[in-house]
Length: 280
Image (tube, rainbow, N blue to C red; front, top):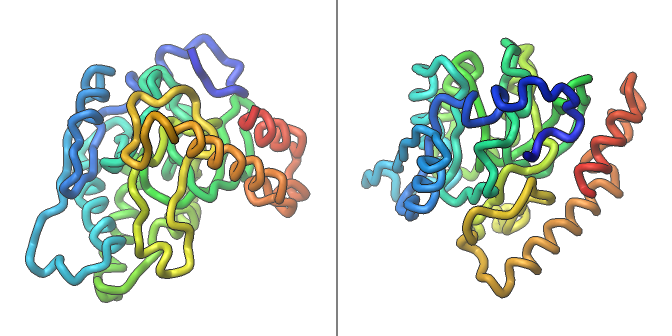
């Protein structure tokens, strides 16, 4: 069974599996089909609910990123009612086949967790614990775990944006989640490898504002449960190869493990080992 590479404590592997630690999966969608995703999570043993964006006339002129924030906020509000952590995924997330058996990317006994990304974009690693849990940074909210404590700060964050920013203005609000929660003395986690892929089509807003059209998982925990929207059987190999090369490039150029972080770490070899072996 796949597990965190650095987690040598195998006595509680079953208890630490996602299916035993997550209370509910919330799927955020607009008009996309979520049938495959719902079937996958239900069959894997998760309680699953779809939250679809409301189709209001006043939404027509709003930025797609702003609308995305509104829908995530609706999911966050539902997460406040849960005792266990909540998994939130967007409709174009494609999990790996053994998703339910994969480990929680942080200790289940921790009470200071902010967010744990299961899919990362522009990821960075800050530190690695003795049990192999990696604190780090990611942007993009394709798939992540939150809890009833951290979600209160996210709701406040969304309300602040809604109160100050016009809805038709493009915003990379997801890139501020890490600093927001760390500012509240919470710890944010990235996985050893990605638990799935971003399978959606490009958002033209990103490219228009100087960002990459697409983002893909640099390295996966296993084979995907089904084919992403962006690809076919014929070109999936090349899409994944491009993502792997880009991930290795980020490692080689010091963007995943920054030199400043390495120099300031008391366990630099552990960081180097984590960064290299996740790509092998």
